[in-house]
Image (cartoon, rainbow, N blue to C red; front, top):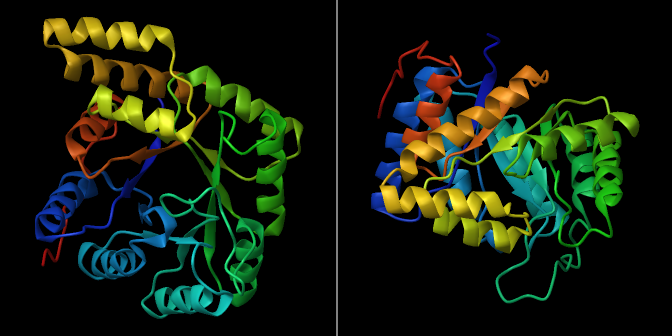
Length: 288
């Protein structure tokens, strides 16, 4: 059985309790030797300072390869590149470069008057500014703002051509969704690695609401499966089985890396990794 490489995404903590939850999450997942971990921005750049602090702390105390999210929202080019320079000075040279979601209540993305107009401009500037490994977003299901499926592939190609090294996809619920997207990318001449983003279903009602907000299609069979599992008290068992099966299918189709959106709740992600043969390899040192 081929064992995939893994990476994990975390939220920056907003309070003391969340800080403990983040560190507990790191302690659970770090022994699986991820190739990197990433720390997100909130919508509209609302957690910019929290993200910077979390990235710095994780980099110093965990020994993990840490990637910082960086967006174009509510910041000038100078401010955004200043944040990137601060990351570089701290030894963090992995960036997840995104256009970013608009602030809550906004009708859509609106570039800062002195800011980057889109992720391609940000990527090109980062490539020129320093020796960064740049990862970008990709959408196996049609982005809510895209004209059609091909538009998402075309945008990804522009990002790669601008200097991105790897793409991390939005989550999806069926392996075929990613595999069809990968085929379209190959046809478009995209050669950079495209890593599927995996969202273990910790709570179906919450994830369902999240998916609707992201424009991610929800298969009818998934609703039915979780309705039945809820009646039987087997939601966790179903979630683990479904996620493991989807990941196993992806690996059998040649996918060598998986990126897990942990929501700072590590147990289900850990259990899926174990089922895929990803087992503890290292101990977390220098715990603060």
